[in-house]
Structures are given as C-alpha cells and as structure tokens.
Amino acid sequence: MIRYRRSALRAKPLVMLAFAALLAGAVGCQGPFPQSTFDPTTSFGRDLAGLFGLIFWWGVGVFVVVEVGVVYVLIRFRARPDGEQPVPIHGHTALEIAWTLAPAMIIVFIAVPTIQTIWRDAGPAADNPLEVQAIGHQWWWEFRYPEYGIVTANDLHLPQGRAVTVQLTSADVIHSFWVPRLGGKRDMLPGRNNRLSFTPDSVGEFLGQCAEFCGLSHANMRFRAIVHTADDFAAWVAAQNSPHASEDSLSTLEQQGLAAFRAVRTPASNSCIACHAIQNVSFGVLGPNLNHVAGRSTLAAGVLNNTAEDLAAWLRDPAAIKPGSLMPTIGLSQQEITALVAYLRSLR
Ligand code: HEC
Ligand SMILES: [Cu+2]
Image (cartoon, rainbow, N blue to C red; front, top):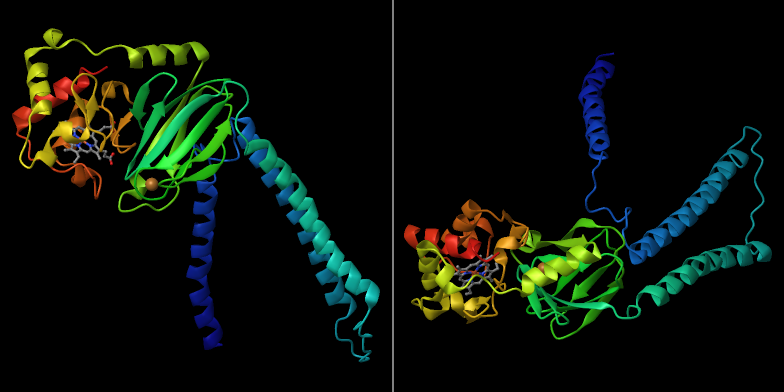
C-alpha cells in the first residue's frame, strides 16, 4: 500500500513535466517559419520539397505495411492455452524472394525521382543567367556581380524571374551556402567552385545561414537574399554603380571620418585601408567592401542593425559583438568613432 502511494507521488510530476514539454512543443509549432524548406520560392526549392514529400509518403506506406504485419503476427501467433505451435517458414523460397525484391523495388522508387531531380537541377542555369560569385569568409559573405562590376557583402540582391547561377567558393575554411526558401544547401570549399542554379519567383527577403561549422562565429554568419522585381533590381544596380558623394561635398565631420579611415595606424594592419575597399579611397580585400555600406540591411553578417549606434559599437570593439571577429579592436578615440560613423553613413 505504502509502495503504491510513493510511486504515484513520483509519477505525478513526471506526467506534468511530459505534459508541459508537449505543450511547449506544440506552441513551438506555430509560425512564422522564415527558414522553412517547406515553403519554397524557386523551381529548385519546389523540386526538392516535392522529392522530400514523395519519399516521405513512401516511408509512410512502408511503415503502415510493416506495422500491420507486426500486429497481425502478434495476434495470430500469440501463445495459446492449447499450446498449438506455428509452423516455421525456414527455407520458404517464395517469401525469401519477396522480401528481397520488395526493398529493392522501394530503392528503385526512391532512386528514379531523386536522380531525375539531380539531373534537372544540378546543371547550369538556362539562357542568360545572372552570375553571382558568393565567397565565404570567416564570418561573412562576399557577393560579386561580374556582369555589373559590383562587390558587396551579406545582402544577396536578386531579380525575380531571371535564372541565377551562384558560383560558390571560400576564402579560408569550408562554409556552406543555405537559403532554405530558395532551395538547396551547398558547400563552399577553398580552391574549388561549386554551383547552385535557380530562378526566384517571389519578391521578398529570405534568410540565409552558414550551414557548415566554420569556427568561433559560425552561428553569427548570416545573410539575406533580397529578391526584387526586375525594375527594382535595375534601380539597385544603378545605385550601387553610382559614385559616392565627392570629397568636397562631405561635411567637416564626414571629412574627418574619411581622414580617420585613410590614417595609417600602428601596427599598419590596424589601418582600415589595409582591409577594406571603398571606391577611390582604398583597395583592401580582407574585410567586406564598404561601397554603399550605409544601404545594407545589417552589419557584420546579420549580427547588428545598420544604425549609427550599432556601427559605433562595432568600431569600438568588434570582438565584443562577434566572438573571434577578424576585424581587430583598434582602440579608436570617441572623436574618431563619431567621425567614422558619420563618414560611413554617408556611403549610401
Ligand atoms: C585586419 C583587417 C581589418 C581592419 C584593420 C579593419 N577591418 Fe573592418 N572588418 C574586417 C572584417 C574581417 C570584417 C567582417 C567582420 C564580420 O562580419 O565577421 C569587417 C567589418 C567591418 C564593417 C561592417 C561591414 C558590413 O557590411 O558588415 C565595417 C563598417 C568596418 N569593418 C569598418 C572598419 C573601419 C572603419 C576600420 C578602421 C577603423 C576597419 N574596419 C578596420 C576587417 C578589418
Ligand atoms: Cu561559415
């Protein structure tokens, strides 16, 4: 009696815990799902989701057949009081052939659509694709548009309805390019070119993420694919290709910022110009190209908002915001930070 009551007491919190976990899980099932592969916006993404669905339903079919078989055998051949022994089926040729063939058939049913999909989607994009070179860096994304002479970072701008070929490579370690709603995930390997081809069909912003552990700030290596209408994309290209405001037209504070940007520091590797490129100012390539940086949707690969306060915090101590950041803490004065923020925010 006492034992029974003890275990009942122990079971109660367990049941409640299980219930709470179930509730938490169910609440977590509510959208929105900004990085769901089940809501594709390219033909490539739809092909992959379709293939997944097909194989999932094959799996459901196999599950049902196997479970029905198990339940049938459990009931049909259960121990009976009269002790009747079932007849063994060892060496039953027809059965042996059947259960060898059935899995082989299932593999064929999975393999044929899979290979068809690979054939359809792994090739180069159709006529006149937009080529974008995506280069993974610890821990940010460089995007180059050879057709337009544009180099930018962390925002992948794309036109709706035009095929895109993204050439994938890395400047350092292995990264992986993944925008779940555009479809597919593909590694970026140093010294090698991989390719993803797709045609975006919906305007919008789609979140991307490095999907291969690449060091301390791997989880802080995010980006956005921003799909525009053809006209808006042309406007974006024109804005990227327009020159920055001339030096003479900068305010005094902005000019001080430009001077701080150009300053050669000690050690020299702490100079902004050693790592960053700005049109007509510098050619560094270790960090993101800063042309039109004020127009980006985020700073530091999705970690910061592109605001004056966040930019100032970044310049003060990058590693405090992004562990392991390859931009050093330079020890800028408050005056230099204010001026640099004003200058960088003039690069619209
Ligand atoms: C040793 C190289 C190096 C130096 C020197 C350097 N940076 Fe950086 N910078 C980087 C790297 C690398 C990143 C990318 C960090 C990341 O997102 O992980 C970066 C990011 C930035 C960004 C964010 C850009 C974006 O689009 O996200 C700004 C702005 C910036 N640096 C400004 C400066 C300024 C101003 C200076 C000089 C005071 C400077 N940097 C000095 C390497 C450097
Ligand atoms: Cu990475």
